[in-house]
Image (cartoon, rainbow, N blue to C red):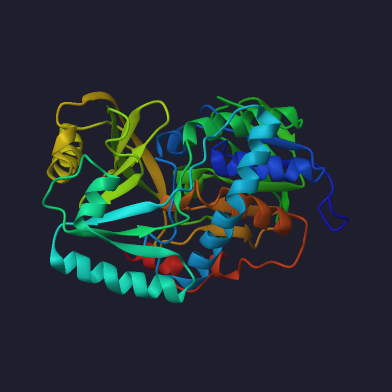
Length: 379
């Protein structure tokens, strides 16, 4: 590691895509890294996601956050290729654009305004007439009136990416400690000392909280170092659909459709305040099916092959918590909400830089940013 880096081992709490990406980055820089997870690597939200890479289609309003997402998207092709090479697992990256379909003239007018703003930002996009939209997605209802195509966005198979990252980490000497039960940080008044789990105490000069929706529950640190992260439930389902019916990521009112190379079509996703409940409910599945079948009735005869739910790590202002905390040696890589898969490359690089003591560009995502904690407590 860099000469300014803390000496000794680094412990990462959380073996999701964010934690694994950071562990791999640190290992490539020469650190000795252990990753602890109470469950299994690359599960939880990383397994439950759709893998979309869509900073512009997500309509992110915060400029600093949008720029960070753009930076990560730009890094994705090289980063994903390097992970695939290290792991011999292809995460199947597709950056072939996203189409948002309009079913009313009002929606189409809003898309034209968005297109102008995106072009002013240098983003390649185009407005599509009705026939062009239906040609690109034959499953769509003929009530579609047009749409907006944003180039350069796309998706990655997040489940394959998780497996690839875990394999790449192991190949680089990272120790993955799974099913270890709760992990508690141990610290004195000034700095972290390490972590304790059911397996005992492990010393570390740096500890990173990448625990996803559970990041605010990690014990052993002062209140000023606890990020106000809360779970936001999302339910999804998968259809077995004929190839070509939905060839690209497509957004319709109330749902999005993400095609996989194996013939599955992912449909997502609900947004629910349900605590840590990850049950799939009849109401959640009904909402998704109603939305997708209104927009794409040709999918009605497709078999439902899977249903699942996950917990996004939400924050009061929608921004992640990244970088150093008031406790020396304790760092955050948490609260990515809907953009954890997208932000893996940029988060890994930026937080690794922070651990090494390099000049940080993470002020906008600091635990001490104005109003973030207050808005959670006042909710």
